[in-house]
Length: 142
Image (tube, rainbow, N blue to C red; front, side, top):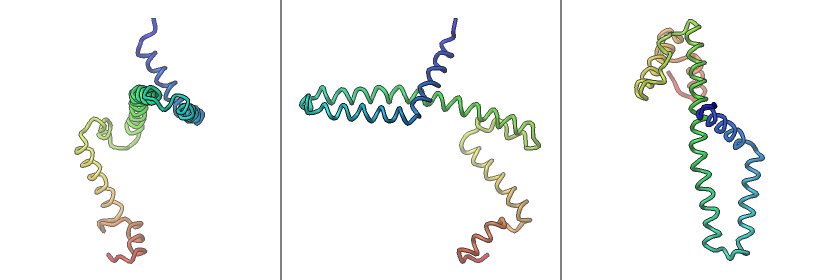
């Protein structure tokens, strides 16, 4: 018995992949043009307008969930790969799993790391060599 989760994953992958192709965009443009051309034939009726409104609403509603599912899996896969690289390297293992921190905690961690990198790279000057060159180029002084 195939798990429903596997079926959904397969459908989400297939639809997301197909939705990102140029041919899919072209088909959608053709569908909208066909709808627009039929306007005079149907007298621009409420039903004629309702067809495009309902169709696009349903497609958009479903695509939001499919695309979100694909992004969630892609982000989890990338995060897992990054965590493995951090774990296997000499980088600090405390960075593994930081995606579970709050936005404020991640921002503070980023600032701490930037401060340490800046201090190490500048030898205490407060500016990286590239920043000094950029400042001088803009006419700023130290």
